[in-house]
Image (cartoon, rainbow, N blue to C red):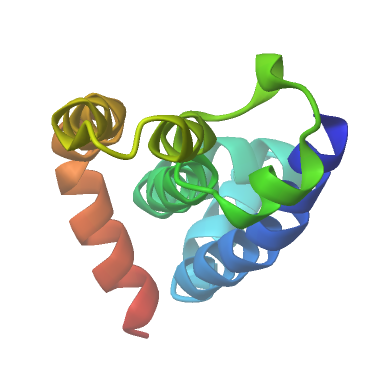
Length: 138
């Protein structure tokens, strides 16, 4: 289980860093300088100015990272050994191997497995659209 967490983290952190850095590079330095002139320290300026402005990029990176880990198959197949910690993608795969005739149950399980991801995308749609666009355009 810890190997799977480490593998997903190692694969997702570079993407999240690139996405958030591209967005934060477009934030005007004058905003941070104004906070520093007003007496805020570097940490306070970051927390009060940069993080609220970067909320869209942070939510976008978090959702893409979650969706990649949620639908992970290859790492999960190679790095899990007990059925107690396997993700739903491997559960569907095991069910297909055991019952290759019953495709209606496989499709129903696949739809149920996609519901959490779909709900997250629906609720965070406005953050994703603005976060992806603002991070891509400088």
